[in-house]
Length: 70
Length: 247
Image (cartoon, rainbow over all chains, first blue to last red; front, side):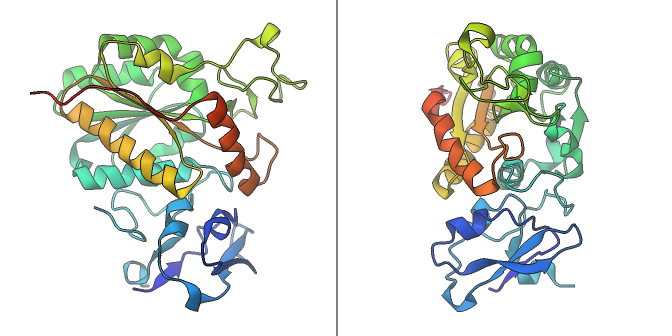
């Protein structure tokens, strides 16, 4: 399973970064259409898909990649 | 069971209008997950209130009605009495449930209407700009209490879950928060129990969820998230009343 970050949903609140036990996420310098700085990968190889970012994200940014193929 | 990273089926793919760090989004997702797991999508009617949550129809893919301010429990009563086969829930804020609509809410609970009320308690009127609400903490600064809530002038915080737990007709009454992963999972468990209490026709069920309001608390998202721990000192978490299953 691969995790996709839906950047257009993200508002950069940082709750996922705060609660990620492996520190795999970081606030990136990219901005989305609404002007928010979005979350990005710090070190994707550290991610063990525990699902805590999904639990804490208020915007449902972290999803399965196969569900959101263009 | 829904797994992590599953986008809930009855959550529409619209971007939430809530402020960054607001807990409304987490609760929306949990409600959608529980509706999916109990397979209720085709027979659910939701009642949105006035407040930040008034755009519920834009996010949850079930039938949603918009009730006048504070009257969601009364409108839900009408729907449930006409169509007892449907599943009816209300989604209200603390200003809606415990200030303007306190009479409607309390009487719906004391009549034991077979509905589920979900109350998002963020201790301020969020949408209108952070005015004092009945659940505001003592000495908390809001736009209408710039020096802090003084108990001599504005009174003490109203503990709705404790009040409703004393009613005979209430089947399930709990309070939870969503500011860490453990509490998110507990909240989902409570929502499921509340939904099941209605499905088993036991009576009124109520879940109060402590939520953050970073903008009106004048905080960033992460410190507002931890500030919810201070709310739990005044509003203890847990199940206050749960009727045993019917024989």
